[in-house]
Image (tube, rainbow over all chains, first blue to last red; front, top):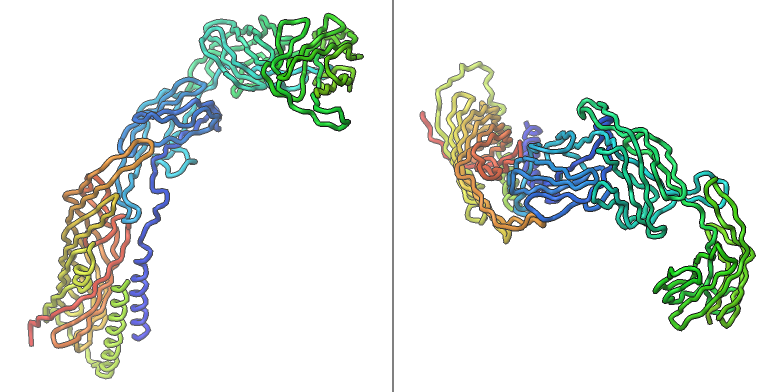
Length: 403
Length: 226
């Protein structure tokens, strides 16, 4: 009996001490985040979507702005029971009308009240398919409540930019085009505005058998490409119904140096369909600027107002701070005169050279330049020819001491 | 914590007292089998000392509880009636509730042959509570804005079950003292209209599916026979 009563006393003591652990943890009390995952209908795998932003009814806040994402987390209003999530994506504008139950719970004196959201459901949407996978909104970013599925996109073409070199490598190397934008002529939209891309994915016009794209490049100006194709009506996935499928891609016209069709069918996710290749620039001379004539003097940045050449009205390096110049020589003559306007005054330099013609990659009729020499210069110290043959990509050809 | 220490001290002294009494009567055990009498011999009426002490000491609690039991051989019919109100407030929020509760159940005395009617018991209870709650707070959200919310559950109710265990020890003439430890189980709640019920009078935190309770009680016994 004594042992039994001792056990009873200890039990009572344990129950008493248990009271010390009643206070709840106040961390992450809110559970008003709804996770939306983007998925592909045909394989159920994650889909990376270009999201311009997600807006919500009842707030002017925009979430997940300008991002490539496989999912987004959006806050729900704890004081409401319905909310519309507006998605602005590269695939178009979409919405999900969600309904949920919000209940207030007084957590503790220290933690205060919180709103508990539950019973999440989708009332309406205009995605291809939507499924609620967890009806309890989240406390932290990460989980998924709603899986959004999309049908395959059958009108997207992937175009890759390549830079050819003065060699025999067939397709050169990837070229990061500094784009002002790409505009399809059938729709008033500018894609890839102020972007630097080595490939772009663009929509084809489904109401026509050809689409013209205008590429506006910061370095290479404006080029135009017209893609032709046929259209098939086919049911790829039962849930998506009959879709318009672009096939038999071909280049109708292009003013890029070289344009090639690699794959003439549309894939989702896209595979490279078309390559746009630029011929090598074999007339670029690289001039380094130095402040003294010591042998190992480093390049020095100079403020340049502009540089002009005798064969073109184009101005180079306008209001630029640079320690190295890359300038195009005149391929129609054996000499090019440049006038470099420094902040401190203008100085001229005349470069002489020999020219020979050569065809690269079957279509690039290039002028190769070598035997560089300084014909004349206004610099106190005569510019020095370091390498007398032009390369692409460029190498340091001439050293100018601007003292 | 102070209350807990006092309780533990009282409990230990009670158990020690009980122990000495039960040791002394062990030699008097009659080996003859007496036919048990189920006629009640007395009514014990008591109150919970913890509620009585907490009410003037704490500014967050106000309550009382009355307990009664009547014996049928080794079985006791027990009834508890009580009331409690709680109130918490800070700059950002305030919560208060008030309500009444009752429990009814039975205990079985495991120390049947004690001449002083000391008892160590196990028992079961069914309990119900009727109460109201108010919650006022400042809602703050960086996306959806701020505001003040005033919520109430004017007529909520709850019911639950309890497993009990305790001691009753005679301390002087017709006075008994003891404790009842309660394991409260699975509250069913109705009438949570505007917010989730926080605190159920007689039970405690509604968010807990099991909860413990502890009464330290003093009883006066009214005998039916001399």
